Length: 262
Image (tube, rainbow, N blue to C red; front, side, top):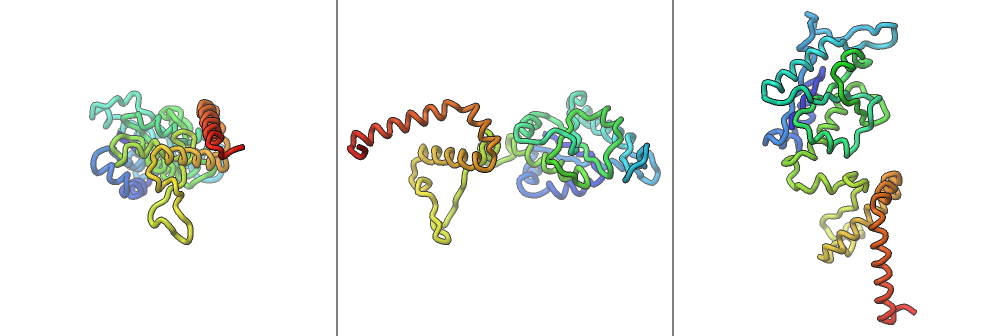
C-alpha cells in the first residue's frame, strides 16, 4: 500500500513514522510513504501558501492553488507508476469529518494508494476541498494545530491491516475494536508480582478454556467501559448467549448427578 501525505511539514510525518513497526514495514516494502511539501508547488516566489480569508475572521487560510497542484503532481506519479489515479481516495483531516474507527481503517487498507491532506492555520479554501477530497475524517472531537498528527494516527492504524506489516498475521484482527470488543487482560512473567498472581486458567494449558476466559473478560471489560460497543456485539451474537445457557444447564445437570447439588 502507498501513502501520500500532502503537508507543510513533511519532516514531521517522516520522522514520526520512520521507526518501530511502521518504519520496519516501510523498509521491507510492505507499505510506502511519501510526504509531499505543499510549499514546493506554490506559485508565490516567497513560498507563501496562505492568505487572509474573505469576510474577515481570525487566522490565515491555506490557498487552493498550491494544494491543488500538489494533488495533481501526486496523481501524476501514481499514473506514471501504472496505478489507477482516477479512483485514488483523498482523505482530509478535519474535526468536521466522520470519526475514524477500526472498520474505517480496514476499509482504507484495501486501497492501493491513499492520499492524506493535512490542513493548517484556519483550514483550507473550500473550493479545492470540493474539487479533490473524497473522505472527511476526524480522529476525535477536538481541534489540533494541524492535520499531521491525525494523518500519522490513521497511517499507523491502517498499516496494521495491510498484509506483511505485522509479524503475527492474526494480531491486527484480535486486538481491541476488531469485533466491537475491547481486548482481554494480558499477563507476562513473573507468575507472581507484588502478591498478584496470573489467573490460573492461563497456566492450565487448556486452550479452549483460555479462549473462553478471554472472551468473558473482553465482554466484561467492554460492558463496563464501552457499553455502546458491548450492545452492538450482543446484537450480533445472540447465539453465544444461547450456547452459554445450554453449557451452564449441562454443567448443573452433571453437578446434580455427582451429588454436589441438592
